[in-house]
Amino acid sequence: MEPIVAEVGMQPEVSVPPEESETAEEQRVAQDLLLLRSQKERAEVLRNLIAEEGKAFPPAHKPKSSHKSWYRLVIGLLMLTALIGTLLFVPPPALKEGAVPAHVIALQEAMQALGAGDKVLVVLDYQPATSREMVSMAAPVLQFIAERGVSWQLLVTQPSGLWLAQELASTAGITPIPEAIYLPGGNLGVFALAIDQNQSSPLLPSGLSALNDYRAILLLEDSGSQFQVWMEQASPWLGKGRFLALVAKQDAAMVLPYYDSGQVTGYVAGTQEGALMAQLLGQQPMHLPHERALQVGLIIMMVILILSMITKAEADATGRRREEKT
Image (cartoon, rainbow, N blue to C red):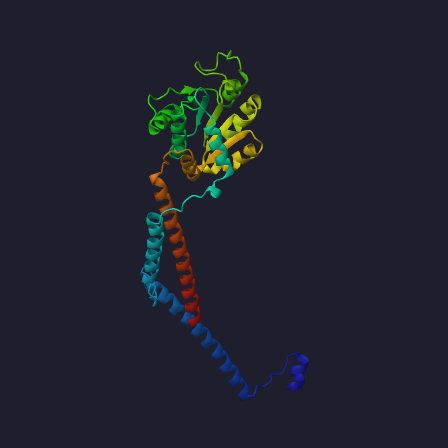
């Protein structure tokens, strides 16, 4: 048959050994079994997902911290007790002569140089928010002026200053309460008052003398920008040695250059220097009750901040130890 098959062009059938045929069959069966096993595993996963659909997640297990945090409260209470006790029961140190700032001594000398017949213009230029601080500084000074028989006049540059002036005079114990004069116009009003030496401007309020007629001009300021307006708009027209100042503590840096240049004869900044000034003038200093509350509040804030930092550090350390164990 081989010559006939070769002539027709057909390939002769090759017989496969029985061992090889069995091996190929086993491989095909193994592949079919592997495919069926993977399908079964996927089907099992899908069945589990369907079974868990709509169920709530189990609560996460939070390991309880073994350390106790009660000692932080004890530390905080001890710190607060010590600091508040220091504020309330420890008296402030006595003021020494060498500790008096030069600008406070300069203001004291300028005030003591005033006498009967001298005229002083008191410019009230502060907001109601700082009235407590400003009144504590200004009331002893006004008492000193009134006792020396100095003629003084109140000038306000803001509408709220009309009733603030009454509060100041009432706190100082001055009777009858002098009438305050309102200067409108803001910065332009200050400039017009400074250049109007003949009192000829109809825009200026009546009853107010020219600035050159006053022996001294006492500024009560809580704003550095407003203080600068008086220095830049009015001081060049009046010369040196006219201006005295009682300013809020935050404006001390603004006043210092004008004091060094001689435009301001002397000044007091803040309630502490105000109390010192009252003692130098022989007056009773005014102590504000809210100062203690402010100091205690600041101390409590500091203690809470420190305890928060300690708590955060402990929490971070606990987290790191937990990660190392896992």
